[in-house]
Length: 381
Image (cartoon, rainbow, N blue to C red; front, side, top):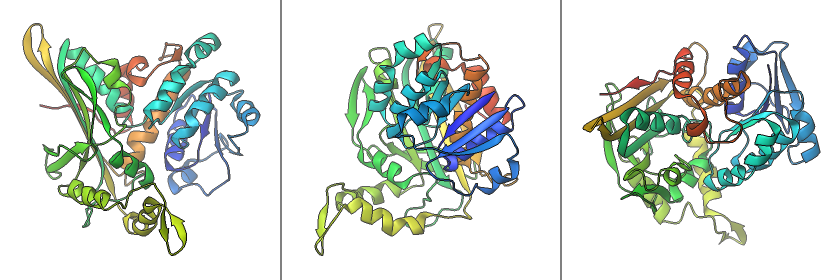
């Protein structure tokens, strides 16, 4: 199988690394607008099957040409490229999956459904951790119940050794994290889709030692289209981000001071976005090249099974892979993207057209593939 990975950042490299470990892979083309050094884990695994390519994805003709000859395209570029790359993949005759991150863009991708179906290809947006893995697990939990009334999803990427004041380290784009901290979250309340403020409704969530009790709060984008799919069918559905206790209060104060704003302000005669200044100031402090991360996840569904009250819960704690040098966030995000592409290419994803992962991915096979990579999804008590 031949795969095209768009974006040579850490998640794209993690996906390429995982594809190279699969015996059916014959070529992985890793494309970006410029050639950058490979991270050590991929450099060690690279062989003749890994092909580097410089590609300007804003050149539609070049993007379509790059797609041709590949069975699947994996998009690990910023989310605003997902819709045009969907169109390029369909035109080039390849399956497509991406890391998602913006619900409006997913809606735009769904408008390509007829074209993808006619081309005989599968398009699956939102194939990372959240959205992605959590959507698949949430729908699987509801399926096992039979009738779900409440679905609650908790996910967080965290440092194993937190350092104050934020007890946080950058495990992906800081700007992306700040978007989630400032964008209202879509939830279901009494069966209706409504928006709630990010960083609100903080609750404790306890994991087994040594992780212990974390805090969870609303953030935008984590479950993408699920609230609209299940509106009128489930009473409560919500997604919350996990952090060490105290993080949400600090970030609310920072936000209330205007430091996360996008409207430029005058700074000594220069127009500056407060958010840009904030990112520039704190990024060096939050980047921990030698830091070890973890990802904590819990998905809970409550309702009835065979007429009796019942509950299904999934839990996962992934940690930095010391042997390979692959972060927990890459294992749960980049590997998830790779698993999706592998299952599209080998026929385990049978749907054609544009479908979200909870609609298209066979949950049992997906969970098994994660387990083979050391990302173990357990049923929680």
